[in-house]
Length: 302
View 1: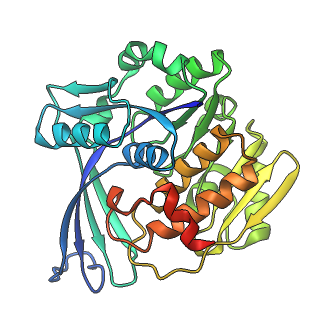
View 2 (view 1 turned 45 degrees about the vertical axis):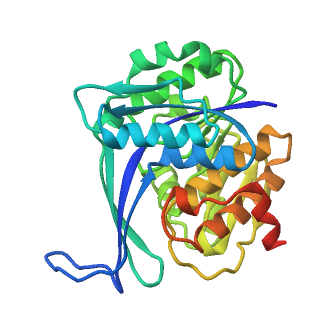
View 3 (view 1 turned 180 degrees about the horizontal axis):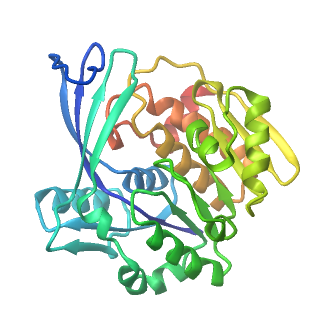
């Protein structure tokens, strides 16, 4: 079985569900409160495990109850936690999430220890990174750390997949190292300079991103599905029609499942189809990791 290395963030998500999201300066009374483990990196690692992949998660937590609980949970998911570093000087990451009645959310993250996952940690995990077949990363950790880990993987011919979230511009020197990049519409616009409003503009954005040095681009379009640019070939994958409860972790589920498909030797197209199915199930449930489906559940959408 091929090994997937996930490097990224882990947070504790504190979620309040309300009828609508507040406007600036407004206090509203919400309903359900949930506290769940989250963070883009952790969500993606959990997805890989639940989709049946072999995964090592490289991250940093604070030396506190949130960090310790998170590591215990990852271990229970059959994730290799040997390279989750503990930071004595900074707290574990926390995300405050509001979710409205339509499943839309807004999120504020206090990065804590995630912001201190550094190059020295990557050197400490170098042998493990080099033993992987696929490296999956996001941008809730320092960009210098992402770039350094990409250098390690590139030297060994490992496929590097980047989920460029949260949205920010990226150095071409990083993009050139990637096998695949998976922006959403907002991220694709920042990376390409082209506003994504439909399939045609998504294609143009994918071409512009690809011209920076990455051959394979998957732009996720929410309820409009996903657009794949694989070399000179385009594919459109439709989304599954489900009742949305909470969109938290939908993108993370997509990325984790996509990596498992590629690790199993599926085409990018078939991997995206599986990822779309997994993310569709995620939005029908509340929470981050609590909403991520297991591989066996995907048959419910066939």
